Length: 248
Length: 364
Image (cartoon, rainbow over all chains, first blue to last red; front, side, top):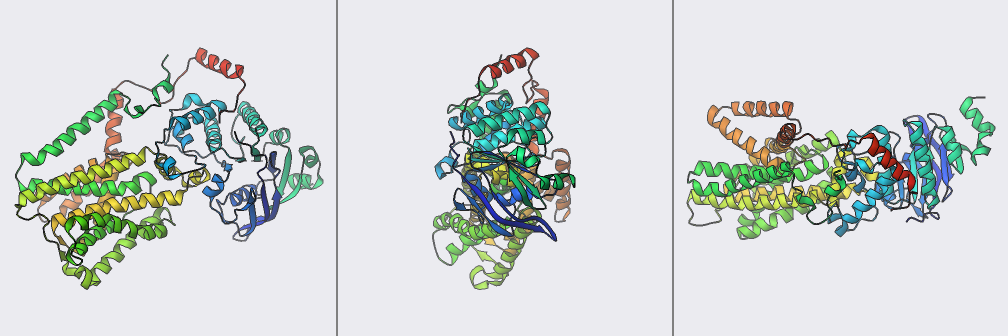
């Protein structure tokens, strides 16, 4: 099992512009290791761009990202993933033409040449994959092509796929987006359980009920940088947050 | 009740589940393989044998192309570059360096594989249409170089390679090369199959589906693509080396031809790029069609139009390729099965009870 409570993720002075638009503007965030961190903010406040810059899916203009004490500012997304930072995408991304099981077997944490050359359907990996599928509740769909399962099931598959790489830090971009309330409850429970096992979570979410009940620490983004941070109850009553959200 | 996960055997025989479809496929492969091996012994017509060699050469080229195109979805239209490099490397090693033909042939894939490393590093920085253009540019550069570097390549007059086997008649020459091509094709198919079922292959297929997602899951996509690219160049150049030895006469215009690169793509797409035997099936269809149309339409360029029409028909009606289309027909008339297991209300309730009764543990 992962014991990632000590793994830190620190971001300093991160900036990213698209043309004249500053999507992320000198953002400095130190996530709490071993906790459920939430990232909230109005639409267009730069949360997803920040996410993408941290995982190097997009190259930031400036700033540093430190993962587990290592500077990963110039690293590649795959190396960051292998260092223990798993992520999901805002619009659920799975491998549509592969089966549910094959989707699970893609994740790589510690590739060695002999491991990569070995059969993909290695019994040990299959068992691990089945364990995760069972845990998110879609193990009965193992042989189905991923494009044929429902959107909610695809969300669960994406989460299971990320967990298959055994990340210490899990970044989820809108895990409750487009899924029904029952499934939101299931995802929340799962996040809580996985957090209790030592995994750090960083969740971007618009569903305030979920954020407030789930997270230990909330970062509020506005115009590309955090304007407030703290426990959910504290952040909720922060005048800067109310202004950003409601314009009052 | 049948348990689907029981079918997913985890033992060493996992790949040999005997579904009727699988057995039919296996039988077909055996029949075609036996025919391919027996065919040269039943004929002494030079034309038929040389057509067989041409089709095998196409099959090896298309299978070589499919290491890149099939696994990663990166479409290279300029793969004739590695065919041409293979031809010229073998020829130069024999004619200029004066190595024996077998040593020249053995060194060719190694040398071209090494040349493919820096090319791959440059070309794989871009995706989609840009990658296609880079590959075309490379074959055109090589065409100009081979035409201009007269002291090495013989320029536009080309280069002649002496026949490797002395004292063989023309028919015997074709027959020997037929079997050499078969052996090379079997080797290429074996390596493709081995990659296909490996974890490395799973990473490559993930690149084909969604490269960014694969990276986010830790797949070192750049290296994976580069390795596939080099394997692809290795087998394409092997086909080139064999062609040079068989044909004996090289000309830059034919060796570095965009049309040859396009044929490789079309053969692979026609048979099915996700299939082991897809490019081979494509090569048989395209190779036979070209020969048939050439015989029908003589020296006119109409055989190209006819080939184009054939390909248009296949793309329109079998967009996934011939093999998946035929398999689809087979399943349509075979027993119906859904890819998603349907459950009765009782089964669903029983499963939910079972999930609720056990506290989820940490299986990982």
